[in-house]
Image (cartoon, rainbow over the protein chains, first blue to last red):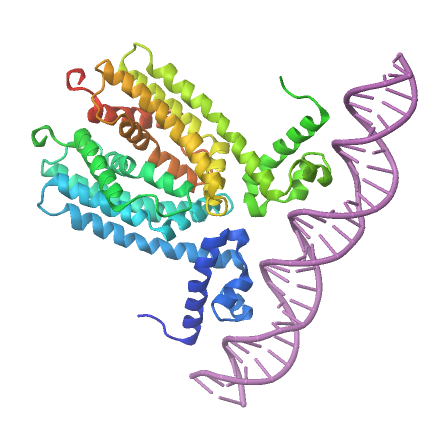
Length: 210
Length: 210
DNA sequence: GGGGGGAACTAGACGGTACAGTACTGACTC
DNA sequence: GAGTCAGTACTGTACCGTCTAGTTCCCCCC
């Protein structure tokens, strides 16, 4: 499965080292010398694996889109049970918050957005692979809930968009504009999740369950 | 009122020229030589008005917080009438979308977020002056509506956060990750505003008006 | 009204630094 | 022993902030 040849190992070293360098300093601010030094690799080796800085950057960012798997699993695991809908939505919301406020993911978001004009394909792909894919998974789960009569919705995708909007707009913006990660306590996050789930249910629960 | 002395004029020239340079290239990518050239001003003059690149940057970003006035006026002008609430909310939502998807404002958001770790004060101030202030204005307007019996809400600020979350999370993220400004047609925006206003009313309208 | 003094300005060179990408050498690995 | 790698020097470029020298503008006073 995983290629353990020397070439592959060196390449992995470079990628691992380059990620934090780009995350910390941005594309322009990142130095290839620092990448090589941090990877314990010579610059020649870096340029053997990646033609130039640009290609190294895009490779690293594109690799991160695989992390979405975690979110999609969380969605189906939480919503496809038989528990009470309100509790499940709260749990899912809380999980979303925890995942998306992870400091490294925030840095990645900042970086991709900052370079969205310099690397349009990068931004578009990241949005589609990360953002839209989890939205579609959520919409599908809502669809199943609607078929069981728990939700009332004409447009599952719109409902999914509204769910994440209610939940994430405020905390993500606050976190994106403030460097620190001590913005919210655990109970703050619980409260945010609770409020978003409740508002969502008022807007989208079928009448008999309310 | 406005200072027309040579000093003030030169300073204005520099600021006007520097804004697009920073917006286009980011903080690290922006060149002071380019700023001076674009302002038709010598570098000496630039450094007479601003001690260094950092101070020029923060001055420019801080200046933009004044633009919030437009949003707050829009809020009170739209919601403090006697018209039907649903229509007013739709109008307000549509206005928000138009304003926040302005390409230069998007670039500014990208820039401030990208530099939020390098300039923590900048990000925090921008968030508080721009973001929280309009949220508070909106919450106050909702409060007045609740007192007239049109809305049912325990926490006006939470309701305001939910309103903008429903409305903005999806289109703003899409726009931030994709460079182009041809993302949405006018009718797309109308539809987004309509859907957000409707969902908000389902969650927050008092029962008798539903 | 018209000089005159002084601050503000232009133009460009310069020092110091940092960086992308290349080239070379000697050592290690398979 | 052949290819790959570390270490490092090197080239060319870009940029910040300073400096010098000469010019223009503004304002006050006669």
